[in-house]
Image (cartoon, rainbow, N blue to C red):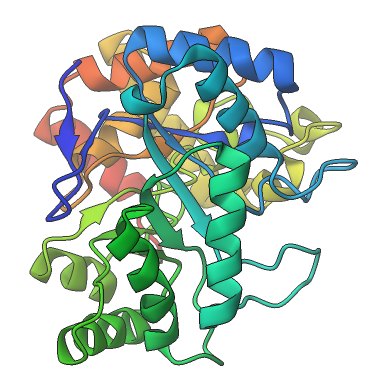
Length: 318
């Protein structure tokens, strides 16, 4: 499978990154192993997780996703074949504060290495900004691990444009490790969290960009069009907010383009992201083998200029 580069980091990635938040949440360990095996066989060898995944689910503790991935890599002896991404700094308890202090992040990195049963992480993200802590503290925490080789590259996620720029400036001024990849929430339903100032900063600094919630928590698959469709579904908490007039317009545009190319709506939504300026590789999840079909569709389809214009117009915010 053709790989893409994550900006100036030089890291090579599969064109779609698998989102590991489903491991231990909507997929138990046995089903997670099956999914990981299939992903590997299909060439999707870049996996994104976080220390907090997926503590929001009933009976699931933080670190569960990392533990499952670590166990699978060890059993299959595949660590050197996987590009591994994880994150820290998010509150590990429901409602808990974000913490990017030097001491806290030092502990979270060590814990992630243990759960993942690895001696290095390819790309480690500051999961959320912590505005109470100077940006240099996180960078100072990572310096030790980058010197030892336990972290190869670092990235930022969910930062404001101002704090992202400050992190870049401080890293240069104080000779600290610099962020090289940015992870925003970005999809056809949520465009304002990336487009504009942050997109400009990423472009000017040759950042890799790997958007999460690429399918808007499943909404862009077209499966959830009414409140009734979401009843009893795990994703209701993330998806219900899209059931509005704009969401309806976006789904209609996806229906139109998917019918034209004879592929799924999810395949179109991922292909749109892959063709957006500055995007390196979107992050997407799946819970069934059949869902992975859209990954292949997105990498193979060629959306026309007209296709992109239809999708762009339908997803415009007022």
